[in-house]
Length: 94
Image (tube, rainbow, N blue to C red):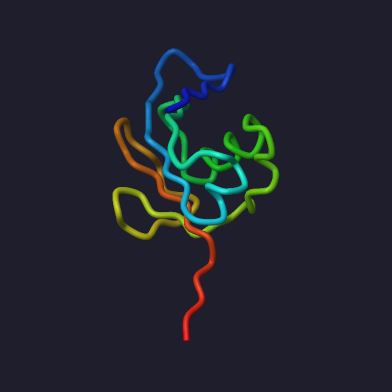
């Protein structure tokens, strides 16, 4: 588990768990990490932090399918301390 803190994070911050699935875990070489973000951070801002701070993070799409605490979420959803953010690649089935 890695801790990624944004140097612009103000004193009031939250810590979330981020889970990466399937292709995203393969691309980034990990399936889970911890993020420290400003207390007003949204799902989109958490994704932007991953994209800018992780080696090969730019391989993540800017707007992947996301779930917060096992519930589908939009990018503008505000995160709370202790949330679990899951990033899921597109799924296909037959």
